[in-house]
Image 1 (tube, helix red, strand yellow):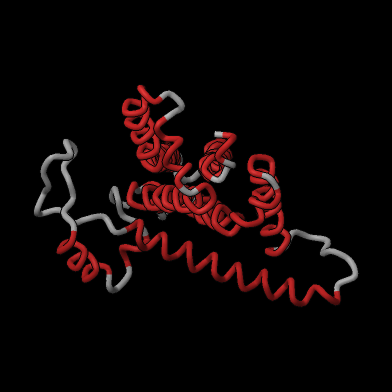
Image 2: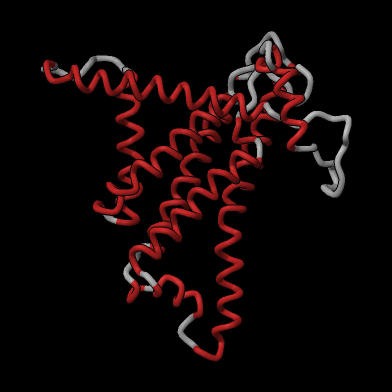
Length: 258
């Protein structure tokens, strides 16, 4: 397929959606300063993200139905099911969070961090399917995920510690307060950007490498590259979830521990 295209390009409403998207956004040149008026803005990540959300909704319904029907089960199933898979991922995510912020906070923030983990994991994995682009290879998607964590960090930081959440940005030494505030402010603003860039860059590189090898050996599945790609998919979802947990855990930490 042409660069930047996927199976979503075959959708009957694709051209109309492109025309609609062009009204609100113009693609930038590589120098990032001006745009090409004749080029179409990228919308593949929107299709892919919606597909992932639909897939997660289906998995959620299947898992919920299985849990409700499990009251009559005497033994666990002998093979891996959708419910077992979800339970394994949720359990691993909760354990990681509990080790960082404690059981109580981990239970409270599990829906937020867990949702990010599932969305990013499945979005990354979509790039392993030939003909599809992972939504996480687009900075719009990854920055959106980073901004969700950024807003949650400071909303709950203020909720738990109040003014002390802002006060600690000035540091313990009063005459260094202006400098410390600028440094801390830049550091906090850089967090969602770094989360987005790290995830986007790794998934773009992973998808590019896999695409190149598929092009070189179209009749022979490059199994080592798929294994490496699967590792990258899981690691990047873990890193995003881990850093998000650390950021929120630091924000809700009691003020006297800052």
